Amino acid sequence: MLDQQRVQQMDINILVSIVNMQIRNEFSSFTELCRFYELNQSQLSQRLASAGYQLQAKQQQFTAA
Image (cartoon, rainbow, N blue to C red; front, side):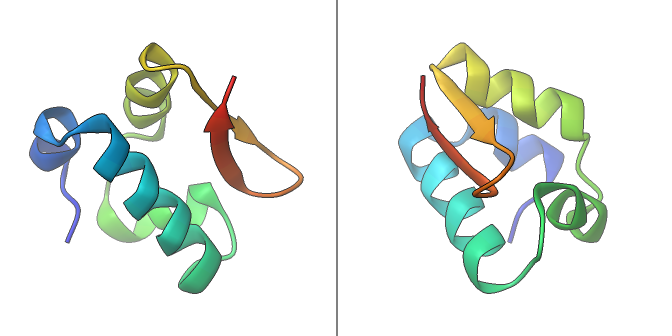
């Protein structure tokens, strides 16, 4: 479903929705999601941050800053 190339090319709103849904439904954390899909956690965080989204660690969810 997710790979590094798709992460870089996907519409940012769709990407944040997928990431949040996956964390909520399939994984216990953002780190676990990145490990499973072999994604560069730092690059994905930076991509989302460039659009104004920040990871809320307590909720394990990306929200608009």
